[in-house]
Image: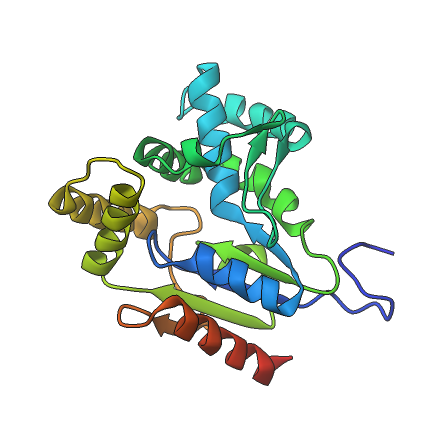
Length: 232
């Protein structure tokens, strides 16, 4: 019996939460997974981890062949976040803080535009679908990775709000930040993600769109759980 199916043969249920950078999808997805007792997939961490490894191993970010080979090795050497443990580990070392840098984010966005890289990571992500269920966050979880998901959420917020969230996060970490520059970076990444040829960032046709520009985490989590209650 496949790990992704239950004893009666039905596929494990999936909630996908997609959205642009800074929409809060990671925080919301982890909270929803915790409350439901489901597994959690942070696809962004997977791309950031691959980009981080490429930068440190001297692999060019446009060398799709080398990146695909590197991704195969990473599958045996890394530990992705779970609902209970948000840490990302590579070869036993916690690299979570290093993956949150702007450089890692930009590099991840670049490699995510390569069709061969996306194809190489497809099975890795789908294999995370296990009973009792999965909450998956990313940019194409509902449109490409889990098109049969029972609930698809597209979480968004204005570029200004998302930049302000990142600004506050950096300041709380004791790092210097320029809000105007962050707004420009958010808008540039949105354009790149939305216009790439492979799996562009856009809501799945049957996704529920939630704008949390004026909502806190608690309210957004409650909205997702209410939508899940109606679906499952």
